[in-house]
Length: 187
Image (cartoon, rainbow, N blue to C red; front, side, top):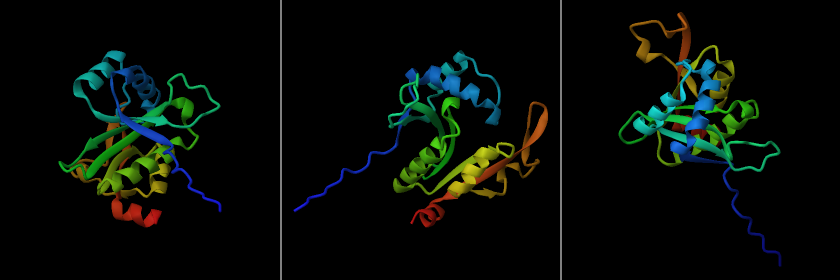
């Protein structure tokens, strides 16, 4: 008799809290992605050190648990999630991700987001929130394909739905993904 007990598949990505060993990696990724960010200033290494060591944000390094044909000087690190809790119960989370430029365009952000979102909702989360520049069409399409919905820009009630960046006003979308919508898409 054949006895087949497959091992559960290991997750494709591991998410771990950022620590001081990630400072140079964050510096490199953040500055290479700044054209896509609301705050597009060039950060010095000292800026990143102060942010990571002093402010201790709840950011997660994205480690790719896959053997790859591509050499990665950063070990398994391919990017990071920026998160901020919007409720004391951790049920509402603001999120964003930056992927190292050497790993962009390979679907890594999409797969990492799917795994992160799935785990967040399994752990009792209710909604994810993010902001994206309208000009960042790749990210906007990714978020729409993941099920995020553009909502009224509540925080911009008294001003246009945009902000000044490089002395010009740019449109920015406020997006949300509710657990019930995710569950409908994944069941």
